[in-house]
Amino acid sequence: MSVVKKGDNIKVHYTGKLNDGSVFDSSEGREPLGFEVGAGMMIKGFDNGVEGMAVGEKKTIDIVAAEGYGERKEEMVVPFPKANFPADMKLEKGLQLTMQNTEGQPIPVTVAEVQEENVLLDANHFLAGKDLVFEVEIVEIS
Image (cartoon, rainbow, N blue to C red; front, side):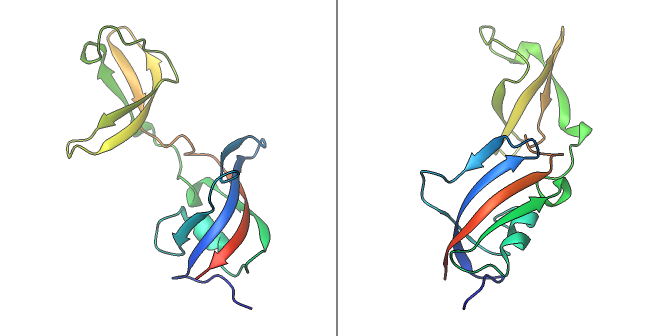
């Protein structure tokens, strides 16, 4: 019986949850997710967690923050002048925005706080600093 190893292309069905049981992502109702194991396409804990699994096998993978989206970094919360936003934009905590870095690449940010002159933008991944739990089923190995 074939089992998943680095370099395999696999397809999985998955449900990603936080420790409190809330679901943040799932392939339910969609095509299975395909990726090359060990190619850096997935977070480290997910990549490592599927190794050794067989087609049809289901498993729960617990991933600590360091093997997921990393720890939160306070230096990734930066002030941005309020004057640089469109005047009609309703700025409020939790608002999701997309900024561009100096190379023009998109960076998703979240409004962390609205101050008098500035808006604090958080560029941490929304799952940074969180331990994750994935329910995974191997659908295909090629």
